[in-house]
Image (spheres, helix red, strand yellow):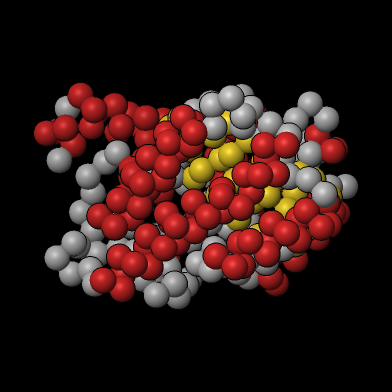
Length: 255
């Protein structure tokens, strides 16, 4: 990764939110960026913005709910750019509601997207990452650590991401490939305005505290820095670190 212009970064969920900001940040640093998500029209706009600033971007639409789509996306990256140096498994979403009310369909959708899709993204990227002693970034959440009513399915999925990251750090020893698990606190995104069927409601109020919300560009900068430094586990924002610390030492207070 010492010569950015030769390095290829693949970001899933790159059409909006943190993924979009990550794409801009990697491009700003001079890396070649592969953009994936389901919404090609939005990816095209992101790619155009990157190109207007002198960056290099490749649009590869991919639905991480489908294994064949993930496999084909990696094949296209290698066909077009012949290498892969980093993957950031950022695509994901939230399924919300009390555990008493969530259905099997809700649970299956949450885990298929945030856990299985993420794991398969890494699986198909790994053979190419090993050739270049590459990097993996897994986007989890402070929800992996914290009890939170009506966020049980989402928290469980992000706890699984944390476990996958720890497992990869063991399995990849000696390969030169690093895995950084990233745990954001409150960051601006569409997650609170998307229902359990994946339908976006722009008019819906985001219940998260606005005064604690980080802008996506600020989040992207610290995430990229953590991946470049090959950190194993990175918790941010400030309030996220405090909440996780309180949960560790004063769980009763957090409940």
